[in-house]
Image 1: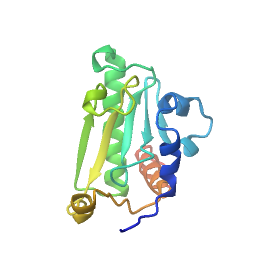
Image 2: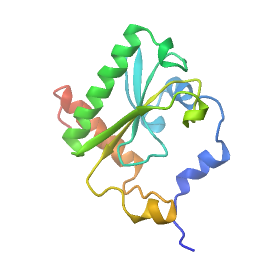
Image 3: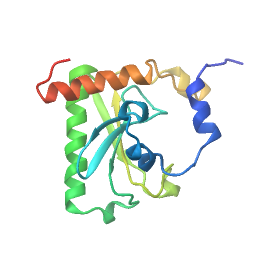
Length: 164
């Protein structure tokens, strides 16, 4: 049997549904620790702690709301604005060749957090899916979360005209 070392997942395994991690993150004063990339008036961007691919982020409203149809126009605009910003930042720093963007609404759709709507943005590269997920149901993420966080922040700073 092949063994892969992924010690960061133990936190999720031990506490799979302990509250709303999005709201908990928003209450934190340390954005880097909770992997929040940007906070705006109506929405925010946070890295996925258990990513499908390097650079996998989530964009969510600040308000704890579970359905797209419950978003107001300002929240919809803010979410789409942040999706566009993080794509530009990822294009600048990580140069993906494409993106998957989606939302799982309701537990039957696969939503891990049902009550706080969030959009997933997953950067994709040619060949990023190999034999591992097909043969062993295992996904390999090749970069540490903090390193990816710093790269995306660099791209967001670049958008603001600040070079780090």
